[in-house]
Length: 577
Image (cartoon, rainbow, N blue to C red; front, side):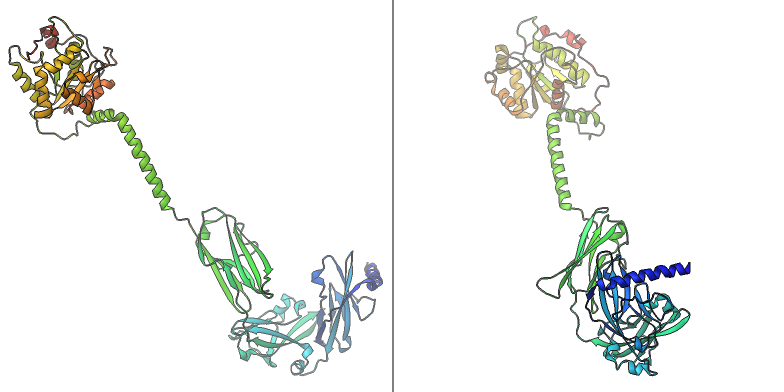
């Protein structure tokens, strides 16, 4: 099996050697200097830029690939060239051929191995080709990197820590000024006195044997400060956003190539897999106006704002090797627009007021009567006004003996039945409530003064008009109502009055001032009910009741009461004018 494996490897090398001459040369002069008797590893500089390719190493102009056997002193392992250990005679140039299915590129690399002197630290810095210069800005913390030792691996640093020297004197790490971290030397607060020659030395164990690795570094602190990154946005602002909504915030920074721009929240940088609710998109473009200036943009995408996002600000941090700048945004819950709320409340109040006025205009009578009926217990008690009757009824008298008119029927039957029996009012009706033989002027005058309202019954026709103009009762009543006592007058039309101009001026005045109520003109139960529209309007103009209304709904009875029965219209005595 082992023989078969060697045969396959030999065949692959033979094919590679036959195709090596067909590769395109990539003329880049790269010279690396190391020291003999130490392990050394070289990488092909083209490897990171080519995918799915095969790398083969050659020495000088040979078409024979370098061995891939691990126990060979010079061999290829994976894509790297190993010297275990290197010798002075190994100096020369080597080729790495990068080949895939479509092309082949060869790159030349010159390796130089210096003799390992006993006092290597003193000699190493005299060879400028073997010294790597590194710089750090003053008054900033940074680190020096031991170059080309990546092959050692992280586990090797734990087994064999890297030793650091400054001007050939061992450095005490973690003393406040210097610290060690794998293949790096951390320098805290770089000062001018940190300038000098640094040496890093590590150890690597290969196939059971240990080898040293030595590198020389010339450290030069940077006196010139790099320009600080400049924020275009955000501008340390507060952004109002609703819980659960989306938000996109752009961090726009003007800086240089190599400046880093990152978003940070709650003390942690927002990485690719930070949370499902936060994503960051990066882009960098060169500014046409400045050849060394770039626009670096980091877009913070909050896919769904969470409650925790309001607790801490989001920081955009831009930094380079010299400085660090930050800008932030703070999320906040939206403040209610009180102006809109007040306008809305004002509009609603106006609508409510207008609707209330309209409703009151339409249902004014019903509202007032409901209030009287429902709240009579809570109405304040008033002192007695000395009045006995709620209304004095003034009506046209029939001059023909034994005749009964519509007005008589309304006055002696309908009015008492509804207003007295159903509503509880007390009326004075001349011809019913006076005694025969009394002085009618005195009776009229006294009883009008004892009444709170004056009800005038109006009918169409010459008789009615003539009566109103010549009646002593009408004259006395109107005098007391309009001039003396100021009693409120209620006009009731038993039929439509066509010409008010023929009526007395007092009646015309009252009609123009407050109008008149018209009786529907039939004797049906609906119109004679206390809840009909006509009687509601009459009750509205009547005085406020100080006692509860009747408990049962009553309708008009066509049978006259005993008192009214003995005083039918035919018995009514008409006062003489």
